[in-house]
Length: 408
Image 1 (cartoon, rainbow, N blue to C red):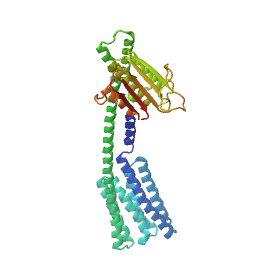
Image 2 (tube, rainbow, N blue to C red):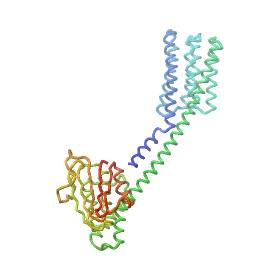
Image 3 (tube, helix red, strand yellow):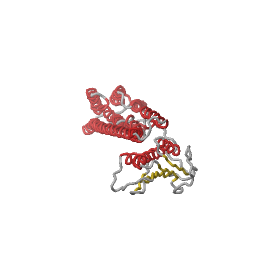
Image 4 (cartoon, one colour):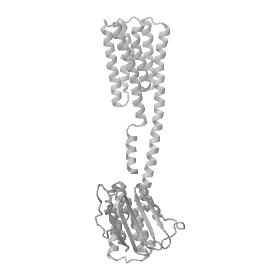
């Protein structure tokens, strides 16, 4: 139903908004970037400097800070500026200088893995810190590169390439972040528009449902009373009015999802009884009624009630015939008694159903008569909403036959 679709859509847009998805993606992307640099560090330390424990300690410190930075980011949904600064100062700035001072690093290749970590740190800096702090952190990282590569005698080409990589990482990460945030905002706006449209659609459907219900019950009663064709003080009429008043109270207090829909037999019997209280005689027969979904039973009952109301208003006979059978059962019923509880039949029997309402009135020419609101919405519309269909067969002098079938 429309109300349920709104609930699902609200859950979908309330958790995991576009901005949150953008943040999660960027955390994952920078984590993979850092992971590639740490892999280079592990291979470099294991291959070249096994006799220097300071290098292992430095690599362990980089791993620990990476776990702190990205673990907290994944848990909280975004980077903690304190962790970002700790990563910049320790991993990006102190680690390369400590490797030179205590790790025996005197060659450019041996220092390169530590400098790479500064590149992945610069990417996080560009999106996680305010602008002034980000520029300060980038300046510290660039200064560390200049000092560190100068100490190991790196060429200008190597120095320029690593500094360019560091700054490019910051710029590209910021561009990705700008683009992801923009797409996230567009996604959130689209979800909001979809939610508003679905809400409006659900409200219209609820108003239409209430309109149909009032048309078939309360309005039918008031129209009959206004026409003066029945005694307003008759006990059955007063009972009918009391039922309609109770129905109005339920309609005001309940939503469409809360309305109780009885089983098919009981639903049809209730519809027949409500019309009989307005002095229309109904000969009803039920045979092998199947178990159908509640909304289908309600659609059958509401459509049949409106068809019977049309007989009472237009046929001029005061007598109608209603037959309800399983779709795979016989075309008619041999019994003449009506079950008050409405048999649901054998669970293994037919799954569909057919309900017909017939009168022996003057009939009409379908090509010359335009179906009214009740026939279009309360009969055809209701059956169509649950996957069924309604057909009307009539000719001048031959009465009217309304057939309700589900599935259609």
